[in-house]
Length: 111
Length: 109
View 1 (cartoon, each protein chain N blue to C red):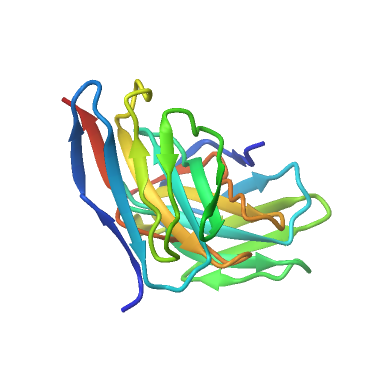
View 2: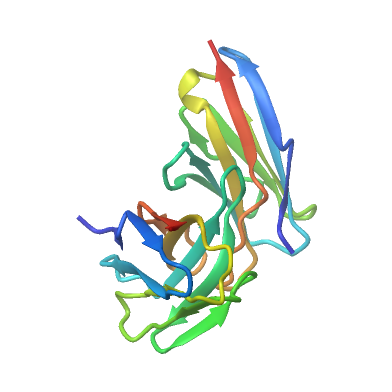
């Protein structure tokens, strides 16, 4: 079955540490996205990529970095510069103009 | 700019109706609607295309007024399973995909 796989499901970060969230899709979608969701809040766009080796900042990119070396993969690194990383992180993919398909998400907390 | 949804939250009794509105500042080609259950990823409900075409899902329908850059989601005879947060996803022709502010819906027995 085609879909999006995010891992890990839960992640804990120590102060000063960088952590990487994985996102893999086998839907053959060109575009991939990362969203952050704080408790009781909406979905905020962190980064998006419309093609391999290219990505753009979303509305809250500070403290995050991404790469898009393969069409299927779009990992997100939460750097130590992100002072409040505790949130639910959702990866999505789509074809331009079509709805987003989501992974199950990663919950990140600070130790 | 983030699309604005109204109301922010609504509480219903089973069997009651509700309307959720989504307003964008950009010209739109289509609008997508999603529902998110607590602790889960959003799930796509329906797509609204130019021309005011209505699409249905269960007893949920929607409309799209491209001139006003607005869409509305209609929940008829609500069920307990309709509880969740609803998001609109207006498509304005670019890859940058910004969700609406969200509407929390709670259906009580």
